[in-house]
Amino acid sequence: MTTLNYAALSEKLTAGAIEFVGNNQLKLNLSLITESGSNLTLETSCVKGIVKLLQALSALTDQVNEARIIANLPPIEFVSQQLTGTPEAPEYQFTVRVKIDTALFVDNLDDPTE
Image (cartoon, rainbow, N blue to C red; front, side, top):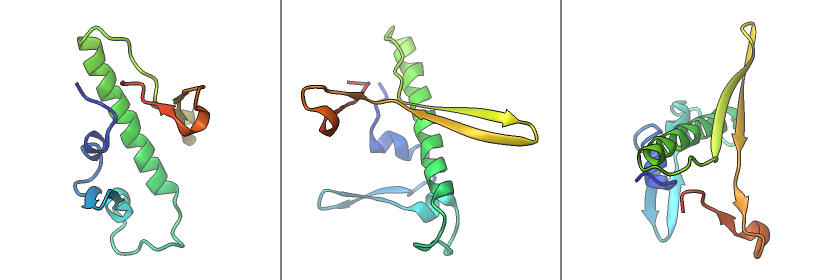
């Protein structure tokens, strides 16, 4: 069954956008994620990169829920995306929900697929 992991997320992004580089490190290649080529710098707006990541997480949540429905499991709530606004001024609205283990509070977030 599909889970919320970086391998599954990488399938929702441009090929090569997430890479394991060793030594317990993952690299998010925002140039690939945003398809901005060589123009990405520290001064570049982060809006497109964050939206692309949220869209991929929303798509992954949908994929997880499709598999859970087939397995007769309840759907999870993690990331959802909605197009809001008007035709003249459309907007994306994202919702991220993560349960917190109250015994350890914010340092221990619960993966809804586990």
